[in-house]
Image 1 (cartoon, rainbow, N blue to C red):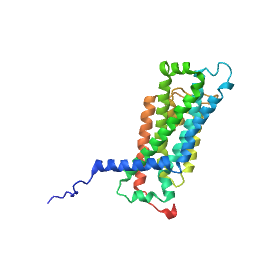
Image 2 (tube, helix red, strand yellow):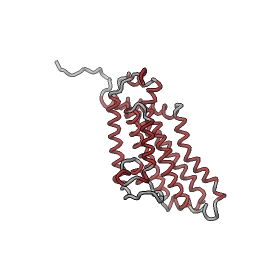
Image 3 (tube, rainbow, N blue to C red):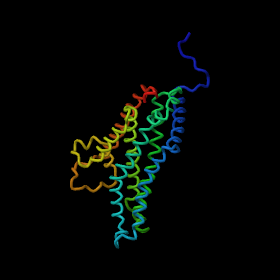
Image 4 (cartoon, one colour):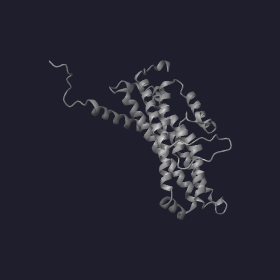
Length: 286
């Protein structure tokens, strides 16, 4: 008599079952992320760069003669806005809010146990939640970034825009901004997912990390490397202009920045999965 476990015919096992479960978590989490009441803050944050781009466009009639048609100047202004506002504020806060609430929000809503009572592996649950949040954040913030860039350069006029996007670096810059945004959502998302699972009050670590990322300009070269923003800036199409108090360091090669972010993301997801394996629901003390 064989010791193998008998599985009824037609029952999904292994990867086919995991793939179906992962797809189910993705569908459910995408609806939660994009259509729940918590998504209102995400849409508000994503709209901020577009509003700034629109304000820049509306200010065109009040610009000095020759400044409105200076496409290079508009592109440099957007570079500064992307580095100081979009990366450090909009993307950071969006990822903090979205990924920290993947498990913490359901603990607060007392709904996480519905997932944990289903026959799904914890690593599949973590993966599905993370992928849904990453896709949602990447699509929203990439679209916001591209639209803001287009609004910023529109005052230059159709001839300059056509030359910029057809014969110039325009398309390459758009791709670079999108790739940087997607990788920012990946790195910050994995970081905040792990923090949300490992700490009972993730706001304090979030504030500390935001402060650290914000002062990265002024840190010594060794400390600069202990941050996400340092590697993201290496992927931007144009480096931001340095101020008088900025400590200059050798820029990171994209061939190092991208694999480094991917490795750190994978390590954080492993850590988050390890914590999720030991997660117990005790609503009375949470």
